Length: 188
Image (tube, rainbow, N blue to C red; front, side, top):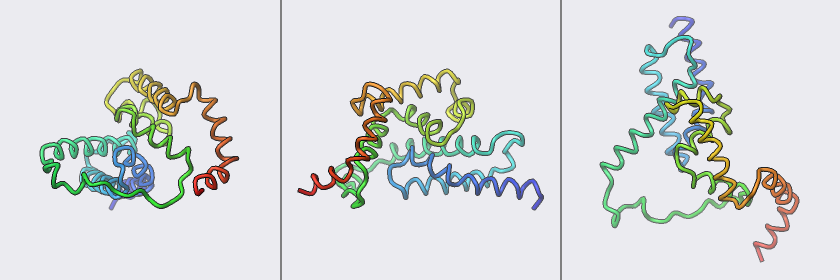
């Protein structure tokens, strides 16, 4: 293996946490997200010769993941089982961990966003990807990315019933200060 190939292999390994975080924007179940990461890595490694030196490996892998996810959706729609006997339509029980009240609310609000807004919010807001890289990954203009991000932020605030980002910060401080009071009240 040449030195440049070794460097590329190391950079792929270093990107696994970011790939996992990005996969969670597409998949609600952690196992599905891990499967998407694995498939992305398999495709990336199989097509490493098609990677253009001088471009960002992270953007290239994010694009592969995004395309893989949308291909899966199309295939699932074609192969959808009947609703009456489908095990996936049965209700599942919630995790038993005690999540904070606000994180559940924010998660639900983000999940209510359209997928293109959720994707941009996760890339920029969570993973710290630049506007330019996000535009490349999503296959749209930088202005479109900025617009989607703005709408996503506004949508999350609206779903949370907040009028401004500042009220959300103030609410978070209040919840963290009174978290134990809320937990005790819920147990009663």
